[in-house]
Length: 134
Image 1 (cartoon, one colour):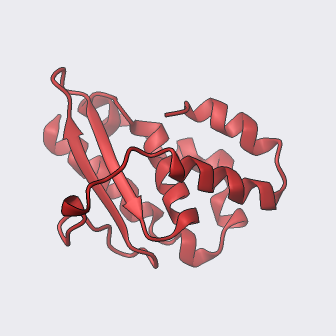
Image 2 (image 1 turned 120 degrees about the horizontal axis):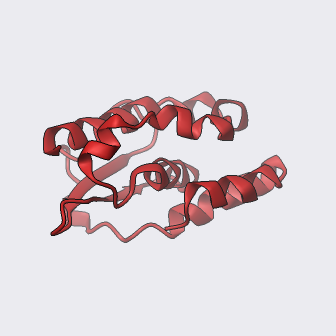
Image 3 (image 1 turned 120 degrees about the vertical axis):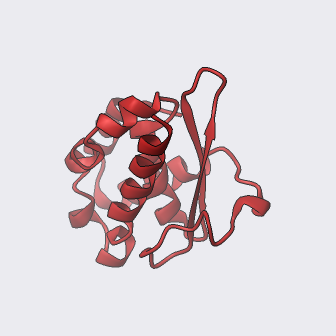
């Protein structure tokens, strides 16, 4: 997964239409999520599209999230959220201000409100998972 500063560098050089393409590409780069994991328990509430997030824990304790969405741009937004936290220790994730890390992308300005309304719920799910495992 591409590091968040690298994504932001590319994103900041693009016009709106190309920013959509960048988000869609980020979503395509997510690890595939098996359909069996796309359940009510892994579904993120409050998203207009269907979004699923499933945490896995590496042998060293770091968290790796699998995620998917039925909407390409939303899947890219999920990938952007995961770029902040992917493969980090639960305590590190729990201490992060994920929303602040995403603030430079100004997603509320770039995307419709129905595409961004679920972001706080995605962040909360990731944080709660990290806090539970920290």
